Length: 124
Length: 109
Image (cartoon, rainbow over all chains, first blue to last red; front, side, top):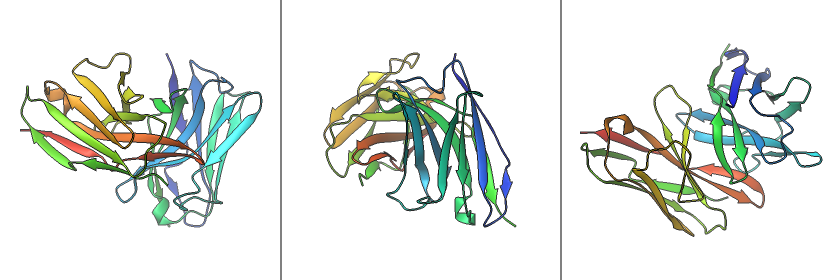
């Protein structure tokens, strides 16, 4: 049974860095038929895909450059020794306040397993 | 970027009623569509992928259809536990991006 357990602070000050971790059990972060994604949800933006990383003989990363909301501020890092994937979002503003989810994507480009979600509030 | 428009934005239906939700893409894509159910305080749950394939463990009253730009999610006989918000999602490979619809809130009469 695959479980994604998220951890990280629920309150971040404006201009600082949001950091979340997703611990993976029941699967391997290096599994070469899945990808590991970060998605957020807010009343103003709805469900918004942020980025993904996956291993196919080497690591690849893709980020949401379309909406511009996180462009240039986001880092997604896999950690094979801890079997986890992390999210960092720099220079946060109150508009980054949202519930953040990690999610596993498998071959059919759908998210079949989700973390429990972390409400992150950006406020001084 | 592909945009997904769901209709209606909210819907009230009776137990046992057949319910159809719609998702329209702004451009046709070779990649199929997924549907999710989200209940308050929970992450979305995958119901359908590849437009019409039922995820393991999902009740058979849920079904999906469509291709190109027009897709539907049907609940054949609405149950009380189906109270939720439903989202569609699509993947675009150039560049890699995922898009979600704005959701349809389903209420029980």
